[in-house]
Image (cartoon, rainbow, N blue to C red):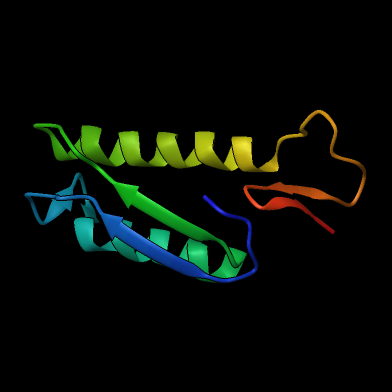
Length: 91
């Protein structure tokens, strides 16, 4: 997850069925791609393992929530209006 103002996403959920409950699995990917576009974030979502599409979807959204929390979190040594970056601090 990169809060970059440069929207881009790669989403590989590896769903095996057409639906999870009443929800079309293609809408899960579409929703994640739309989120990246509208939030203007760069993100990669890859589900590497799992035997159940419900659990794969759940793990993808939980991982996304955790990554977003980390990306938004405060860092020691980073001032107000600054954002930590792997290249230093962005202003």
